[in-house]
Length: 304
Image (cartoon, rainbow, N blue to C red; front, side, top):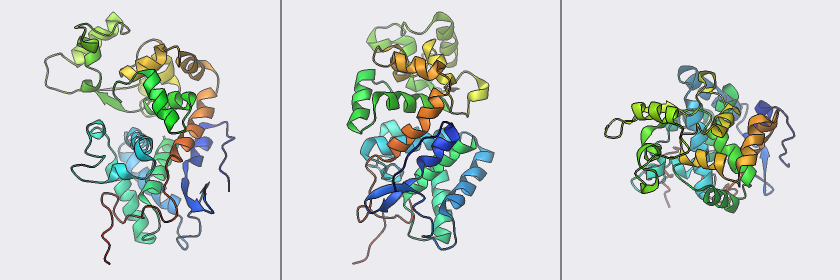
């Protein structure tokens, strides 16, 4: 069954994120239907994520970024969930990732009703989809585009995913502090930050402070936990905190895409869901490749 996404509504586009496992070599929606007896895998995961979301809306940002970081490195194999001193989870760029507990809880619930069937990668994908439904660090634009292109993600998809992922949640001072005081070792701030914003950010993120305060990506309190195009509009006024956000807003390679996503009616909504679907297909392990882990933080122990 081929997966398509003709929806003009973001929520419906996001429903297509359940791209799981293999049937005759193809990914398709609803793979687990009928494979766990009378139990509905997606409903089990939905209920766990909803309960977590009601207590803490920030899991939306956590799950989306977790899914993003998993897929863009080695493909959507849930390797970012593995524990260990040399694991992806322990790598410096992933230290700020959150919501591992949500995935663990969802996986545990699924294992209770349907043991050994649903992969951790699929649990993460469905959890990220569900969280949106309920509600990097420095990289030149050209390098970021090339990285995504190597994974089959277009330049437009890259901007949509980055903007959508950064439209929710928070970021710590240490991720953009260099822009406030010593941009690229110049001893000066990033000239793209206006004086008023620079003054405000320096008060929150003092140069010699050991604290690591955090701010919302999106200035609009009503959008702190919503994936929408409001963040794109802020970027065009140079209000992006991370350097990569500032880069996509000012680079000739991507500026026109940001403008279209910000102001073309319905354009962001139509693009974000399908872009997430495409990312969810990257390097998925199917058939006899990989394994269905019992616990997402560790590989299974086999006895031979």
